Image 1 (tube, rainbow, N blue to C red):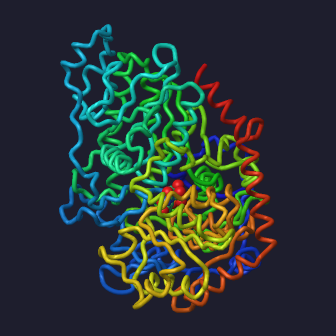
Image 2: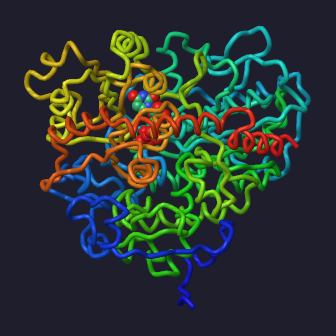
Length: 638
Ligand code: UDP
C-alpha cells in the first residue's frame, strides 16, 4: 500500500473526482517515445532547481532583472512575476508592468497598461436612490445590514423609457425579466481569457431565459466598456446582460499581474461586495439573483457566498478537463511522492498518467508549477487546494471542452461536465468582453482579399511576451515562409511601446501582411482564407482553432499551455510543435519550415476537419455538450 503522506492542507482527499486514480509513472527515458523531446535543459531539472534560486518554473534568469526567459520558449518576462507577493501595497509595482501570470488555466490576468479605460469608476448608487424607489423595501437579513457599505459600483438599470444609465452599461428591462425569472450572477476571474468565455456563457444563459448580471472587477469593467465604446455599435452591444463592477481590493495603480496579492485581495474585498450584490438583488425589479456561476480560479470564496445566501452555484473551468483533473488529483500526486505537499513543486522529473487511457503528462507541465516564482508557489498552491475543496460545495463543475476532445478524462472524472466549446467571440452585435477594441474591418477586409487557405494567422493571446531576439526571429520566419500573414502584435508584447521589427522588415512584407494590435480572433479563424494558426495554445485559442478546423503551430508560453500543446500535437495530432534550438531560440528557418509542413500536410487537415465536426456536433441540439448544458440550465432554474 502506498505510504500515506499528509495531504495538502490536511483534508484534501475527497475532491469528488470519482473513482480511484490509476496513476502510472513513466520514466523520463520511456517518455520520449510518447512525448516529443523537450527542450534541452528542461527534463530532470525542476526538482533539482527547487531548492536553488529558481525565479520561476520553466523560466531562467539569463541576465539582469529584466532578462527572465523561458527555457522552453525563449519568451521573456519583464521581471519575476510574483516576487512581490508577500508585500502588501508595494510601491515599486509600476502600473503598466506586466508581471504575474494568472492562476492555472488562464494565464492572462488584467493587463494594467495605460489604456483609455483607466477612467474613474462610477460611484455607488446613492442610498437615497434606493430609498426613493417605488419598489417595496426589502429588509435584508441582519447579517447583510451589518456589512460595511460596499464600494460596489453596481450600475442599477434605468427606469423604463429613460435610456441607459450614466455609464451606458446597463440595458433597460427586457421581457421575461422580473420576479420569477431565473437570475444568474456570473463572475469571471479578472483576466481576458476568462472574461471572454464567461461572457459567452452569460449570453447562452440569456438565450435560455435567464436574467444575467455579469460582475467584472471594476478595473476590467472599465476596460471592457472602453473597448466597446470604441467599437462600431458601441454600447448597443450590451443589450441583454447587465454589467456590475465589484472592487478587487487593489489600489488603482497597483499591479494586477501580481496574482497572489490579487487573489488574496479579491477574497477579502470581492466576497462582501458580491454578497451584498446578491442580497440587494432581492430588492430589484428584475428579480433576485437565484444562482451563481463562478470562475473556478476565483477560489472558494464565491461558492461560499452562494452557500451563505442560499442560492445555487456552479463553477466553470475555462480550460482543459485534463488540467482540472490534475488539480483534483493533488492528494494522489502528493501521496505518490510526485509533488511536494506544501507548495506542489515536482519531486520527480517524469511523465505520468492519471489513468492508463488519459494523456501522458509531465511533472514539469503541472500548471501550478508553470506560474510565478518559487517564493509564491506555496500561496498559489494553497489557493488551488482551497478551490478543489470548494468544488464539492457546488452543484456543477462545467468545463469549456467537449467529450470527444477528452473522453478518457471525462470518463475518469465524471464531476467535470463538458459544455463546450463555447462560441467565444462569435456573437455578432453582442458584447464579447474584449479588453482592447478589435480591428475588425482592417482584418476582415484584408482577409477577404487573400486566396483560400493561404494565410498564416499569428496570435499569442493576451499575456505572452517576447524578448527582442525571439520577436525578430518570428518576424523573419514569417517573412521567410513566403506566405501572407496576419499577425497580432499587442502594444505590450515586448518591452517598451515601440516594437523592434528587423530592419526593412515592414517594407519587405508590406504587400502580403497585416499587423494589428488586437484581432477579432473568432472571425479571423472562421475566415476561409486562414490556413494555419501560430498560437501560444491558450485554451480559448485552442478551442477556437479546433472548432474552426485550423491546424496549429503550437508555441506555448506558460501555465496549462504545455499540456494544451500535448493535446494539439500528440493526442489530436492537429498541429506541430515549435521547437527551440540549442541556444533556446525558435529560429526563423524552423518557423518557416513548420509553416510549410503544416500547409502541405493533408493528413493533418483531415484530422483537424474531423475534430472540428466533432466539436460542432457536440454543441448542436442533441450533442453531448448541448445536453449537458440543458441539464445544467434545468437544474439552475428548478
Ligand atoms: N483574442 C482576440 N484577439 C486577439 C487575440 C486573442 O480576440 O488578437 C481572444 C481569443 O479569441 C481568446 C482570448 O482572446 O478568446 C485569449 O484567450 P486564451 O485562453 O487563448 O489565451 P490567454 O489570453 O488567456 O493567454
